[in-house]
Length: 408
Image (cartoon, rainbow, N blue to C red; front, side):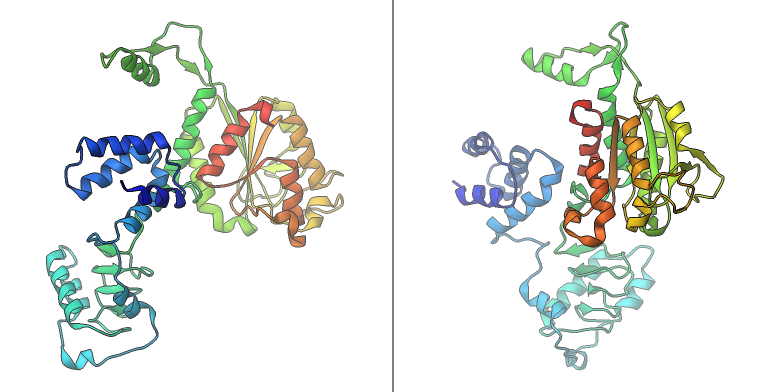
């Protein structure tokens, strides 16, 4: 039963095991979802999906298989024609003159009457049969209509496409779980969640077990047939020491907000014994700067870091690696600070030699940099350090690599 659904799930990239599928079939045999398609959706998702990051894949597979269901988030083909073709028809304006959407929405901007807007939407669907672009009434693009996309109405219903004022109270044909994707750029909360994983690398204190252990409690309770058994562990001591080095200015300007989120997450974290933060421009040389402005003289020397920070510090370098080859290899240049007779590449090698655990996060990482002549610097740095995309998955992989010395 539903065997094609199983193959669609696999085709969408969901790793559904045979055991999970048989569990779903067993739940159906026991009529646990009744005759409700909605209940089946939630039951199937609960059994087959192991991570929130796969919700979007599951939804796509579900809608593809159950394509005959009544779904309010699927845009009918005729509406897509109204929104995507270049033909423009205005004859409807001569047949009907409904109230101005923009004026209506502005008058009700404090407490928009959603039922009234939905009623207007149904009326337009019943009477419209051609595309409309601009204006203030029909389903279409631009203009001040409450229906369509890329318009300027303060509210209404967006249908696919791009937002105009980011104020629609409903969106048709929208994928709702993109924020869970693990290849997307990080936000502040996701940085915090990722850094919490560092707690598992802290040392256990030789003291009585006074810290509640959720995982052990769940396992022990299950072993006891459901009878609650509270388990405790020895508290951990923060032993992780972190050195953050941020590329600042130039091509990193578009990533300022992202890097600021990372900085704030580290600053608020309580999983580190010590955190040091410095800045550089394009490449690390004999000095690193105390502030993002990278002003001459407001720095500490790399030699000072080597003398005062021991090899136990975990180092995270954040930068896009976008620099000219001479910025990486020349010894005589003066690129935002002195070189002291070494090229940038040689300074990077000295950092790698001193700090045994060092990774590089690149917000604009190119997987094929080695094949591109104009990405010579990025390819060389990727060969020198373990490099990851500055994304949810990239940060998680970097932390695992950073905390596993055998893997470096």
